[in-house]
Length: 126
Image (cartoon, rainbow, N blue to C red; front, side):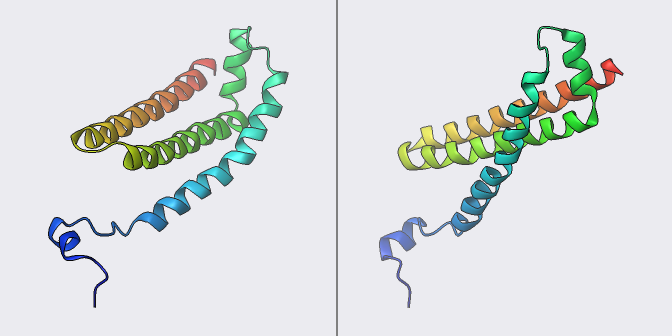
């Protein structure tokens, strides 16, 4: 016996069966962002951001580069998951598909740019 309506079966708009996975991913990224954000907030005041050489040297240290990359990646993934829920709830039709695709592309581009930037700065400072 199915709880899905005949119209739902016909249109294929039943459960996507991915809600739990999405929910867990969002919660895990939120938990990961807590210590990473605290690390960033505690570490940043000790850095003179007006001195480019000091900023490059700070990023070039693996003890700073790795948490910085984790912060950016977790933050972007968490952002993507949250915005995806908003778009799925409030945007309809073809605009929904275009918006979701645009969000994916934007977040991937930002992640690649951030990773590339940290690598270039780390290699250039060494």
